[in-house]
Image (cartoon, rainbow, N blue to C red):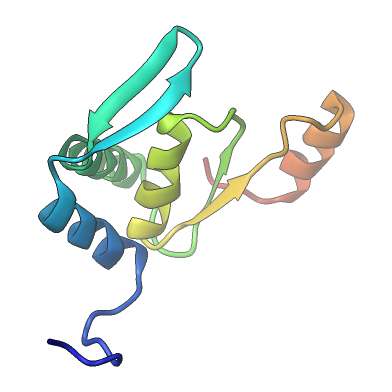
Length: 113
C-alpha cells in the first residue's frame, strides 16, 4: 500500500494518463442536444490526444492562450484536458454575457486561437 505522499505529479496529463490506464473501460456519460452521449475514458483519452496534436499543428504551444465559447459538453471537456496538456492556457468565455461584453473580453484577452 502506498502512503499519503504519492509519487505522481498532479498535472492534467498525469491525471488523464491515470484514468485512461486504470479506468479506460468506464464510461463518461453526459447529456447532449440529441440525447445522452457516452464514451469510455480510453476513447476520451484518444480524442484529447488528437485535439492536442491538432492544436500543436496550428502552432499553439506553451504559454499561448486558447479561447473557447461553448456550452459544457463532452467537446468542451476535451478542451479542458487538451489545451493544458500542451502547456497552453484555456480561456473560457462566458456564453451568458451580452455579445458586446464577449467581444470586449475576446478583443482584450490576446488569445492565440
